[in-house]
Length: 406
Image (cartoon, rainbow, N blue to C red; front, side, top):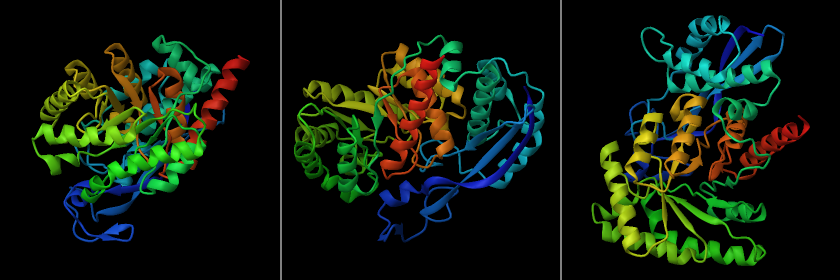
């Protein structure tokens, strides 16, 4: 089996592109939108409908395979590439990428992925979104050629155990803080709420919100339900505390106390503005929390965008988990390697990505999760809890049933 043709079209992501910097700087709300000019390069407005490029490959045996060039909703921020141009990606997909795919022998995904990282178009590496979508096609094609699931291909090629059990999910409750928490509790998600903390005023209400979650769990769940509460501050606390770590620790410990008896994860409470400073700041904060007797675990996301970044954060011992943000790494294989690096370094894996991805990329991530066994897997796309949980849960169930049938 070989690639025959590749068609590409402009589609949409599961959420929006959002200029977090403009929002954090106080852009006034206007319903779901914000007034004022964007501050991040590449944005035409503070909130804008995201685009993606959807690709369909036709194989020599007539079957078709899909791969989506998804991006994150905070694109162009914290060292990430700027927003992709859909017309450029489509032209590259149907031109040089199609030519490259046609000459491939579909034997080993890992070898083909390495070739993808060496591919240059006009002397440049293709945008991470295009590489993300193409790597999905490569993984699916090898799986189809070998009569395996994507998860089985990964475990075989990377020497990982094949475990026929679903992975623990993180439900991202977005801007609907209360209704979506109820959904997460009803679905017994082990990790939530990963709320969309994007405005300074939300910092003021977080302790009260944490206490409400604890009460709500008591009202809706049975005593054996013991989730971990995951909060994502997107670096907002830096605007409040500046370099004063004592103030930052006091704030975070207040949320930890309100969240008791449930464990707490904090994703990027502080943002130092560039990679090396971020590593030092997270290490200092982690050490300060330990000295204060806190059990809070820190998750790195901002400024940790590439495989090289992930390895650097692991080696720096600055965090307890890393969000392996799949679209930012450019290829599915880089996500796999990043997860392996985390596991070897004793750092937990938050296998993430974005609410802005698509159903196609989310299903691929479910197979990656079954292979690399993350601490938590983001239920995506969207921020409604239900849809993302359904997509990745059902895909894991299909794959596990296939394992058992083999």
